[in-house]
Amino acid sequence: NAGVTQTPKFRILKIGQSMTLQCTQDMNHNYMYWYRQDPGMGLKLIYYSVGAGITDKGEVPNGYNVSRSTTEDFPLRLELAAPSQTSVYFCASSRGGIVGYTFGSGTRLTVV
Amino acid sequence: DQQVKQNSPSLSVQEGRISILNCDYTNSMFDYFLWYKKYPAEGPTFLISISSIKDKNEDGRFTVFLNKSAKHLSLHIVPSQPGDSAVYFCAASAGRDDKIIFGKGTRLHILP
Image (cartoon, rainbow over all chains, first blue to last red; front, side, top):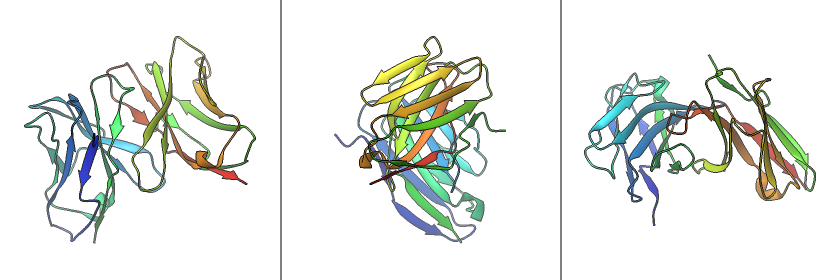
């Protein structure tokens, strides 16, 4: 049982480039989330989804897009990378309710 | 505007002694509180939670205390062990199915 898998683990982007952070879960969870963690800061919610085809904005959605075409996958898209998007990104899932969040191991993104 | 505040960025405690991590919140709508633990290069993992209808919840060496009138909660770890060295995030939600808001975290060092 892999849980929540994030790829890649590390990435360096140039300003203006685009990329997709992948997140997949094999627990049949309906709820999925994307958080970012800046140095010395807590986790900020970027986007979340309560089921396939449904997404909604979190606290810091600007500069990002998401889609949820399947229960398993919840990719996060950066269209025009900016240095302010340098962060560690965590994907999480739950079957519903807040206690059962399972986090992936994160993607460390640097924009130069 | 930080809704969940962890004012101590770091804490050092001798092995075998009690570790007390503190957390304050501002949103009176929060009614569910959680603590997550995070090791380097890993995602956060759920540790313990408490509902606002309780003032204490215990799970082995971990106890969370909630003081609603002061909008304050604390995590007690006793006895502290080397494996407890990690970053601890306090988090809160305005309902069991609502989004989680995280604090900035406290880095706990257990000294030999």
